[in-house]
Image 1 (tube, helix red, strand yellow):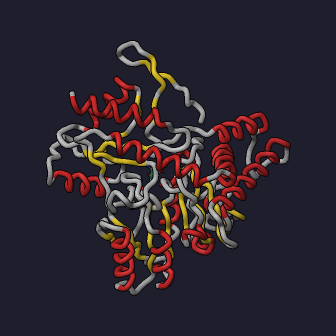
Image 2 (image 1 turned 90 degrees about the vertical axis):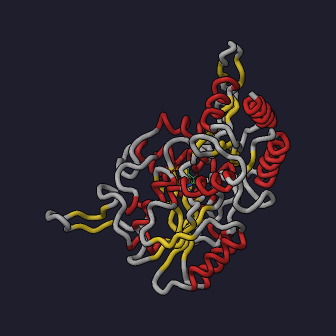
Image 3 (image 1 turned 180 degrees about the vertical axis):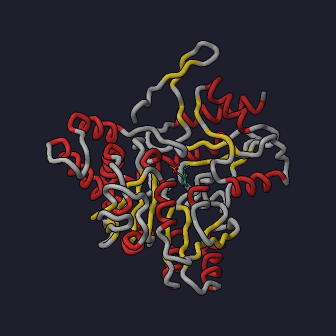
Length: 401
Ligand code: PMP
């Protein structure tokens, strides 16, 4: 990873390697992404517009990037890959592309990006197990008469738990209902393949997938996307424009929702990481993350409690959120950064309803921390045992003091 050896100075004057345990917010940049961007920069130009070598190179690079991402997400014939700014952008785009009067079935524990954009919501309470999630979707589908869609996270950004997407998709499809997956925390850790997940749409962000150049992806069924109003009106999205207002035809295909000059470097960076992950031993990467999870759990000091919806044995990615009864997670995070050179995150992680629920569940014990919230550590490619050990040791010292 670029910047693996970043150093930071502590108040004691000591200089230490920065331990980045905030991958769930933004992961470091992969060498493959940095290299792809560096290689393109000297030839960089406008996509889809010019005739010179810069523009032609850039157009090819952009469309090749789309093809690589299509392979990464296991796009089926007829699926589209649209480059967006991030997951939030991708899900907002899709929310506006839903057929009229569609009811969106979702759980209250979603990240705000997958909670707020949807019209006509049927919000289900956060489930206590994967089976409960599946049953809740099935029951909800049974009660719906009009068009509906289910949107669900692939892996939660608070608990890291992996959701039963395949099962939910199978049930939804049996009711002729499509499934949208928020893959922001899934794609960096586990294969996020539309076909294997059985999902109809998938969204994810480049900056969490080791490609921090401002890009994101929405992939999935073309029919809704081609029938929808363009996400942004302007050049690229329009095919022909007449003299009078409204006298125009819109493009179909990805261009319809990529109005304006696209983020070429963002797309190329994402594709570089996708290409690297396509040939990587993802089982080995997953096992490494799981080893760090086990190590972190073993090292957790008394007074730090891992929160979960589905219980400790449920599969999860490299994310752990902790309740710290009697302590303010924000202050603890601040001290970890300043006094120990460790970057984590504290608060409610843009999932307020879920964190409120998890914190309240803890409150029934001893949690009286001012400023409700949790402390989150998250890791991925390039994370080390030393990162985890430093975190648990520092946390123990802070909780003792
Ligand atoms: N969904 C999940 C599960 C996330 O973790 C995040 C980012 N924290 C988002 C959506 C939104 O991602 P972005 O900020 O890149 O749009």
